[in-house]
Structure formats: C-alpha cells, structure tokens
Length: 351
DNA sequence: GGATCCTTCTTCTTCTTC
Image (tube, rainbow, N blue to C red; front, side, top):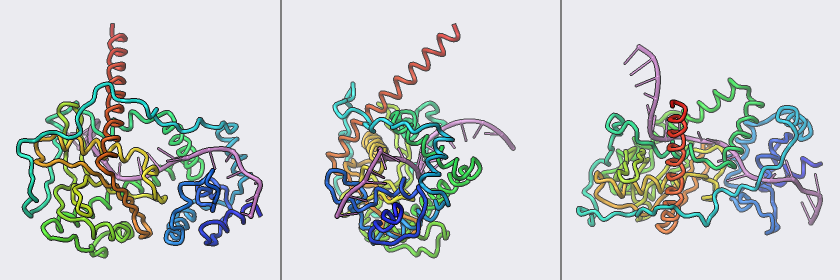
C-alpha cells in the first residue's frame, strides 16, 4: 500500500514500480499540494513528461523494496547520516576583485552581421598551455555539498551496476552528449545563412540522438542568426579559456547557448546546477575576447531529452547573467587560491 | 605514437497524508 500510494501519484499516470529507487529519485514528482513542502518537480507538466519519467524509472528497475535497499545502503555505506542542508555558497559573498562582464570594444558591431557561416575558433592549447579551462575550474571548486551528493550518487550507481557497469553507463552518457553536440553543430552550421533554422531531418543523424533532436525542435524554430558554434573563448585578464556551444539569437535576443542532454527532467534553472555559471564564464570571456566583435549579455540553457519530450529552455536575463558572473569570479578566486596553496606546499616539500 | 586538453554527464528530503 505504501508503494502503491506513491505510484498512483505520478502525475496521475499509473506506473508499474516496486523499488525504493522510485522513492528516492522521484518522490519529488509526488502530488504534494502543500506550499510548505512543495517539490520543484510538482508543477512539471507530468502528462507531457510521463514518458520521460517512465523511461528513467524503467532503467533503474530493481526487485528490491525500500526496506531491502535501506538495509543494503546501511550494509554498504554504513548507517544513514543526514547530510547538511545544501547551502551552496553564502549568497552574501562577493568577489574580492570585481571585473566587468561587458567590455568596450572599439569595433563593436551595431548592425546585424552579414549572413555567412558561423565562426568556429579552434582552441590552440599550444599557445596557452597553462591556462585553466572553465570546466576544470568548476570541477575544482565544487562545494562540499555538491561533492557529497555526487559521490553518494556514484556509490549508489556502482552498488547497482557494478564498477564495470557504471563505467559503461558513464561512457554512454558522454557518448550521447557528444553525438548530440556534433549533430547540432552540423544543423546550426547549415542553417546559419538562412533566415530560419529549419526543423532538422532527424533521420539523417544517428538513432541515439534522434530523440534529443526532436526534443529541441521547438527551440530551434526560435533560433536565428547563428554567429558561432563550438568556438574557443579566452579571457586574457582573468586568464581562463573554454569552448562555448553556440552564439545565436533566441526569440530575437542574442544569447550564448548551452545545449545539454539529461536523463531527468530539469524544468527549473535551479535543476541545472553549475550550468548558468559556466554560461556566464563563456559570455564574460567572449565579451573580453578581441576575436569577437560583439557583446553577449544573455544566456540560454537548453535541456534535451532522449525520448523526444519537449526540451526545457532556460533563458537568462542580463541581470541574471551578471549575478552568475560574480559567482564565476568567486569560483575563479577559489581556484587561484587552491593553486597557490598547492604551489607553496610543493615548494615547502622540495626544500 | 602516446599523453594531455576541452568537452560530453552525474547531485539537490527521509516523507506516512489527501
């Protein structure tokens, strides 16, 4: 009865399920009507995303019950210790040194660019061998809570799939992400000279990415004037680099766009973890980079789903981008501090 | 030829009630 109650609550869709994993991963989908404990997933269009929820759930099916899983957890990881409330970083924290997000550019473009293929500046690592990348900096400055939850997730996945199974699972996720990105690059490059981005002919692409492409088709129809794809950006004052996914107009607003694939629905910006910080880092670098003759103030994170459910598009205003830019500056400072600590430690050891 | 780089992903409670 305990389980049936939960199953019956998934957006009114009856889903065969009998494992505690459901409780763990999808209890957020319950029809919690009290405002006090409202889950961020409770207002998801559950009918629209029921197929996605089902597919995620069916991939995690196990014959275990909540009790056996809990017993297993305790056996494998020890007694459950409640984690500290995810606090991320104190909101009052500000960067020690402020850097502008936007930069004055003498040759700033004010007109619409001429039609033509989008820019694709290739990253030449040999020119800047020691400059850290956006991804690396974000990885090195994860909060203790993020590390805790990621490690817990990994332990649970390894317990479920085994070391080899987990490795295969991770590689598959990366592979799908890469295939999706290369398909998108192909689509956006070929559409760049046209007024509209026509719906892609999904059958031309590998079967693994067809669902993702279908998922983003409604977003693509609002994308125009693609200016850059998979293009390197470098901030010479702050000394970091990265490769952004795309710069294009979304609903008439020039944005840095980040395309993501996800197994779980991410209907809210808060579900995307560090993605907005990553986006602000790319935009700030682009705005500082002389290779780009324009400024980008807005951002867009598009989360695509394998089963073709409509992607979630999170547009970030210039104000929001500025907030995340400051968060990025803090992360950058943390990374620099870490590096200098490491350098002084190794210096001490050598002495 | 091999190693490394930039990406690609992954996290977010402990509920017993309508």
